Length: 304
Image (cartoon, one colour):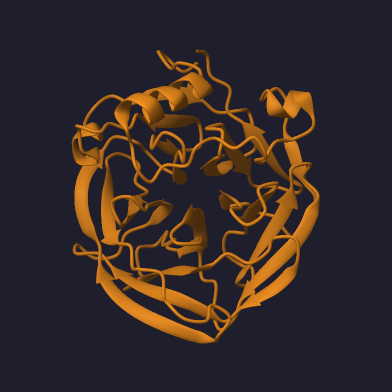
């Protein structure tokens, strides 16, 4: 059970009205919302109905079509995303051309002068990769089959050698991408700069390669982290592992580096097979997905 956490809507309005955050998204009346009342309340899971999604390892809500959500497989699949409606029905697919999906572990959706997606090819269980990759591109329509030829390829290197990572989030307001290592004990949070969205024709083919060094900003005691997201309405940082989710409340005065040293609020996850991804919708509701066929998606329930 989550401790001392007020209701999502109340907290979102409080932050927006009192803290004066900029770059946050106000709650939408037309956002992603399952029609099944039990699923919406977090008492039941939603099945994502394609047999192609066997190891849901990333989750992100669409900014192009608010009633859709994206997911992708772990390793072993092609470089593609799958899209689903708010009833879990498969509705579209996107292929990232010219990319070899080595170990896709997370994704993020965000608004940066337009709807954008990030896919993180950052898994490294054996700590052997000299570099890992982040791909950023304009979000296509999730209700169609599409191919993306234009994207930014961020080649990331860690200062202390290879690191395993399964958790990535985009902080547009501070122009940075957060990357959390996966470790049995202490995990390291890294950041890399968020590049500006390219100008020009977004449909024109072209790949921009940007080499970056990840900067460590803090260590935190979250073992085996599998997913991460920033709440679009409050700025709260959510991190998941296999058993629990951790909430670090946003603050206008206290930087994230300091907040990561504080005790987060903790909530137990739904009893799913193996939770590998977490995402927050535009109402501030927190969702996770689990590996398996069919992939299951469920809202985290916490007490006010």
